[in-house]
Image (cartoon, rainbow, N blue to C red; front, side, top):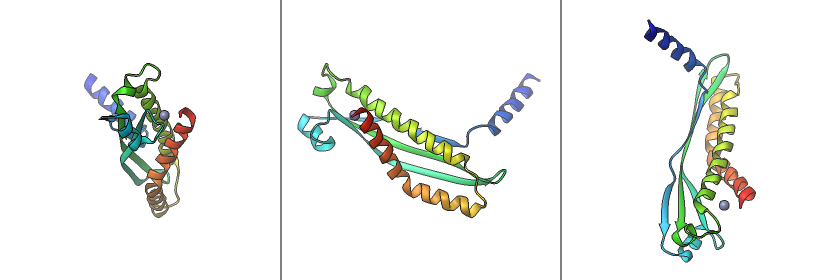
Length: 153
Ligand SMILES: [Zn+2]
């Protein structure tokens, strides 16, 4: 009996689960051999940098009280470091890069959550909107990254 109750609770919970997900892979760390090499990759004044690659966007339209989309996005961060800066006393560059990623995660989650809550008149409207959002997703992430950079340097 207990098991039966647990199952129905799980079923109820799953219908209220948010219709979106943001999956960010664990950052892949690359250690470059020199400051010059780091600056060539990241820019002349950088102590480290993180590139976002492998961006995916999936918007699946379904009918429940009007048309809504289940939105799933993902991306892979690649962080570039030089040991000389990593071990420097002044700035914790690894933590700093993680803070940028957290900013981007926050913005991406808010965007995806808002998109998944929109109601569309028809399946075509929904699918058109998902197509447009999918095409622009990488550019949107770049803007989130730029905002984080402006806030934190
Ligand atoms: Zn920074």
